[in-house]
Length: 134
Image (tube, rainbow, N blue to C red; front, side):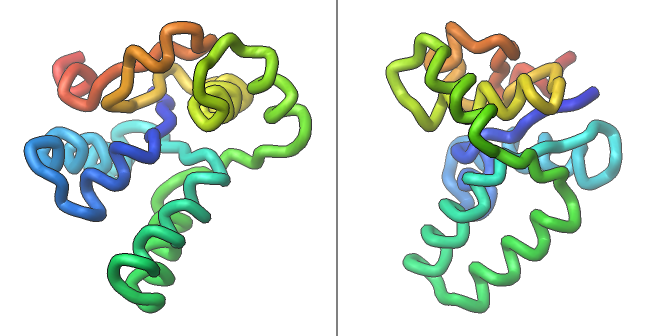
């Protein structure tokens, strides 16, 4: 199975956000254990770095980015991926960029807590808790 992990799921774990932490952590653990191929859109790394550096410190930001680079495939987002994102009928360009990246990497799912935001996605979106019962 191949899935793209949306930023909100990653931040649920990084920031230990309740009540979402448990299901998000289980999905990430499945990826780390090799039960699925986990992908991250390249723009998510810079956002995570910014947030962790701002709310913790530079060392924590460096550590989490290094950990993500070891355990996830990073989907490059060049002009074609962003052009495709602009073609999708999304209210939020960042969500369109995630959907376009997932499509480019031929992911089966986008794992997100904002499933409704991906109604027009070429790759189906699924909540972490729902993915765990597949």
